[in-house]
Length: 424
Ligand code: RM4
Ligand code: MN
Ligand code: MN
Image 1 (cartoon, rainbow, N blue to C red):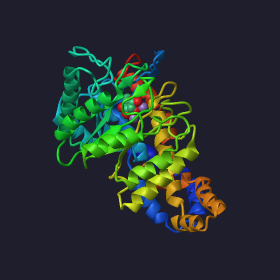
Image 2: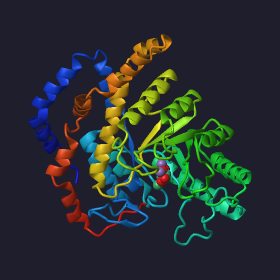
Image 3: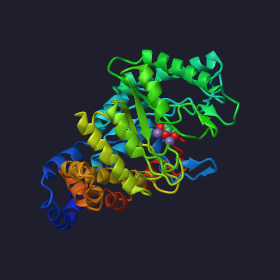
Image 4: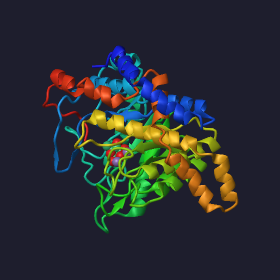
């Protein structure tokens, strides 16, 4: 289903004149444009294997047809996105939703498509068919050792799959916590979880990283055992140098200052992974940039600043993943929009004049500091992002090709309209 190179080239030809006008209008004023374009071209964000199907809520799920029937077809969908935007060249697998059956076949397919295996995700928030013990009252925190061991063993198995595929990181997100006061001894829950994480950490290959993701609430509504960045940082500090905190945008209480959180985690060398989505209320998993684009820009500004302060490589030194759901949109269109929003915010963050901003701060010139950030945010950088795509062999307008080629209909024709992809 990958669009022919000629289709992309023809579409670009049609749009080129107008694109060039917009791009040259912008480019005259930006001195470090070549470096921005290089960074945009290098930047890749992983697509999780569960995001290719129509998501759902706990009330219902309305599959849109043509969903991938297996891991191979999920990879085909990501390759399709990547061929259009050249920025989604990685896949993040969720186990057991997407256990690879034939490693060499899956690896060969990934290399054909130019995809990398990013972080592996374990799942101890659901019970699977045939599973011995239930996670109803938690997994790594559980009062029963046998259940904790089952969760640990599962994570060790996930590492094994990842090693076979060439991944080099494990993301642990736990739904563990309590729904009612009195249900849990917080200290024991923490200690059990730490001990379980340590058992997994011991089995981490030397060149691997482990990401500990936090979330404020849901599915537990009174306490979450890894509920915020402070708790995650406690675990990752105690675990060791290969353990890092993972920030998921939707996992905070309303109005949390996420940009400050990422800044401090980077300062400590403890930010390892980042999940993109957007939300109005909680873990809504809406399209990136659809609700609070200014916040996304402010976060990106701190990410860039904090990574530069530590000489980190923007592309390789953090694991970037989209973590969103698609209840009412075609998932592939939604993912194209998400990647575009990420690239826009990243480009805007690269526009900020750090020297001027710092000078304004030193003078306590609050107005100048705000102006510097908002000048960048209010610049329409879409022609820069499109130029980077063009230079990488992608499409000037990915979404229009997807629509003009009626790709969803083609997918329905080959895969059928009744399929529900594995995932949430
Ligand atoms: C959780 C969390 C994890 C994701 C699962 C599916 O809310 O964000 O990162 O893997 O959802
Ligand atoms: Mn997440
Ligand atoms: Mn989430």
